[in-house]
Image (tube, rainbow, N blue to C red; front, side):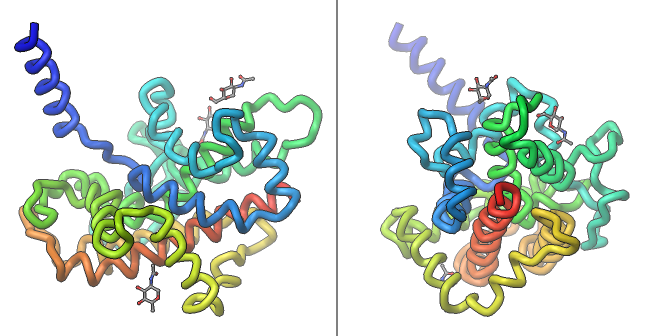
Length: 286
Ligand SMILES: *[C@@H]1O[C@H](CO)[C@@H](O)[C@H](O)[C@H]1NC(C)=O
Ligand SMILES: *[C@@H]1O[C@H](CO)[C@@H](O)[C@H](O)[C@H]1NC(C)=O
Ligand SMILES: *[C@@H]1O[C@H](CO)[C@@H](O)[C@H](O)[C@H]1NC(C)=O
């Protein structure tokens, strides 16, 4: 019995290592973005979010911001909505060219999904909507995070860095996962006593000081749209080229040099994701 249990445990752990969560900031990245967003909500938006959140969330938006990753298997149609594949080495994004799933269906990518769930949420308060707006809120909060992870708008042939094997310090990893989780986790361990709220506070301080004169521009959006995902996607593929892919080849060892020079970009993208999620919800529910 004991032996079978151990074998089963080994099998499960091996499977987890083979298929690490490879889409979306990790749990912490998504939670950080939602923790930055929630206190920035207007009264009307905070009330709508409070009404839409499931009771189990206890009015904490960050507790549902990884939900979309957990339902990828029960909603297989949603898997394509977390990212965008762009042409190799071009370092550019165009909605008409790039926003499609692997079968070529237009609009099925993270920018299309943000537009989709934004317009669903705009029906809030009307007569019985045909959408589940709790799910729409949970998807939108997640995808506004994903679109700010530079490698969620990555090259097609390496699947946004998923097929590039590297070492994160001494551990085997893939480049996509380094940007989803490892940079954030290492920052939490090294600078914030492994405390996510310490990290959130530090980012919030910079939003009010270092970045104060940029925040309005982050929130700005052409033609009164609630959010401008095409702009965020363009920024991400540029950052992917400038920071994530730069200097990395198969089996690169990424240590302090890489960590310390890329962390400021991760901090910036988490801040922008949080600010823009709040701005979008404020416009949607205004
Ligand atoms: C839009 O949302 C609906 C409801 O969740 C979903 O069935 C559809 O696949 C979504 N499409 C996109 C492009 O997000
Ligand atoms: C809407 O979605 C939530 C989250 O998946 C689910 O718990 C709830 O039952 C759904 N509501 C309806 C009316 O289907
Ligand atoms: C905040 O800004 C300071 C000064 O630019 C920088 O040293 C620090 O790393 C930043 N922290 C975060 C979490 O953005």
